[in-house]
Image 1 (tube, rainbow, N blue to C red):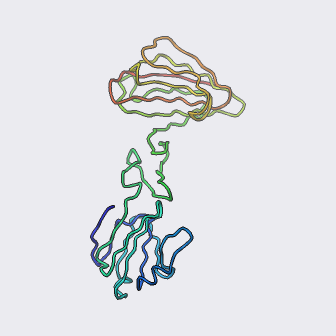
Image 2 (image 1 turned 135 degrees about the horizontal axis):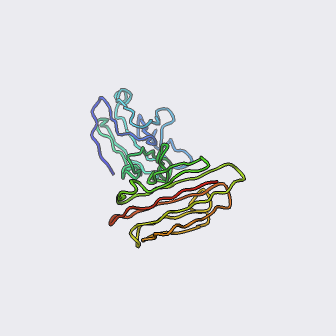
Length: 236
């Protein structure tokens, strides 16, 4: 649980799913419950947007105000009596900074959601994402033919006109054999059928073909040892 001291000018660490309830008395708090068992005031409950300041003007108008902070995600609650200068804020899923690549995290009921802009994908925005719609193009690992870096996650999504197939030729692969790889999927996601898994040192060209107008190429590296990666071309 995170404790924060807040002056009468307000606090700034309220999350977008934090509920602050103000009560005149303990009796009022006990009498106000919703269907989930959360104690809250029907008259004074406020749902805050992310990072919005809240001043204690309302709280100061009550004698013996009880300031109660409810965390909606797991229905945790805490009460501060008689002193509106202190507030208790329970930890939220976004406190651990799960979103990668400096993406925005939003708390929600029973979890969190990362806001991934164009060019990123994944639950935590951990994947770099490139989208190809031309009838032909060149795809390569970052920096090719220079060495790629560690801890990379790249998705290359190919989508051509409906009714067409995609023919992809990989012109050599040079990666750390145990841990870095190129994978080609017969569809738009990693749950699609795997066409090829390529890693290590492969100098010869390898050609695969999709059964639809979608194909996904995935490149991933771990935390150690790199190489020049791969280069591929496709056409429909």
